[in-house]
Image 1 (cartoon, rainbow, N blue to C red):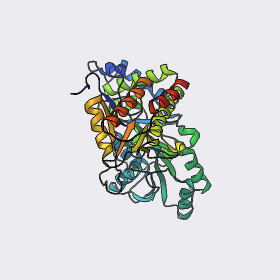
Image 2: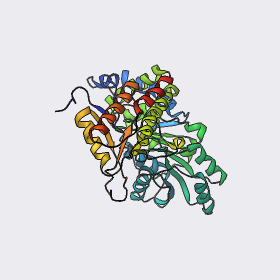
Image 3: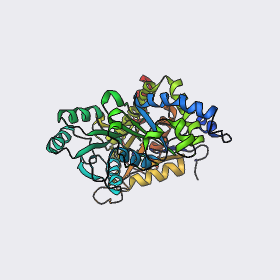
Image 4: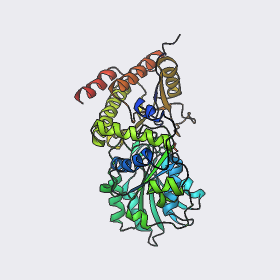
Length: 397
Ligand SMILES: *Cc1c(COP(=O)(O)O)cnc(C)c1O
């Protein structure tokens, strides 16, 4: 017997919950792509999109998921034979490096492990050692969605500058944009990669690459036709003349999502909501961990993302818990991605809670309540007071 009827809650780290406003905006017949409403809307939307990344630079919009935007961003500034320094803190920056390798870009990888963030001192050291200035770009994630780590982007820029190195700083904010505080211009990122389906609350299908003048000046002239960001910086011209059909309905959905962000009070209000809800989740996880095996993967709260938390629960408890809460509680949690432990090569002891985008206190407290029910049903030992600790955090706003 299951009680799991009603609306399911997909609490994985992307795709995230799409608001009705976004879905309804997409529920329309195809608009004219040559003139009128859609064309005007896109031109008006660009400043709002750039505001989310806190940049006065440019943005190129692709019909692609994050993997596409990764490849596009890399190809515009890196040519075959160029070298990128890849900062691995889990899974995603390393994968970006692999994508680069497939298009002939060499990579030098520094692996920071799976339980902490980038150490800027090691990056500075690697850049100082690059006396021939072979490294053209430093590739990092702000949030690694597998480990839940949050990297300090301003500190990375400081490390690059301290080494006196000209490399571009390229940041994957696919999981973190619209969740974790991010200041592209103030922190000195040259390129920011994002996608529609995480903090931006729109179904998968749009990839974004934000770029500043330094990135523009590094243009690889051998970039492929589709990925060339130059025509896409002017979306009106691009979609009408150079680049194929516009992603009409996704653009309508994104417009609605950006309206929601504005109505909430702007991106700072969105960051604050994510901060409080993440702290509520961590309070619960820590309370459960007091009396059992649950452990947040990233021990230092200063290095934790506000978009996703990865956890270990021992043995095969992560998978058991995921299955229980989905079957009995209408809650879908994320798998332990790329994680493993001695005796657990497939990572069944791990799971993730996505807390990105269109979420609020009742969704968070509901998810935590169902997890507690699962821990009880499965006899997984856990400490008391978790829900109360989470409610306490939320009560203080
Ligand atoms: C989701 C994600 C990606 C991959 O995005 P896709 O849209 O699935 O291709 C890359 N990097 C990070 C940090 C992500 O969270």
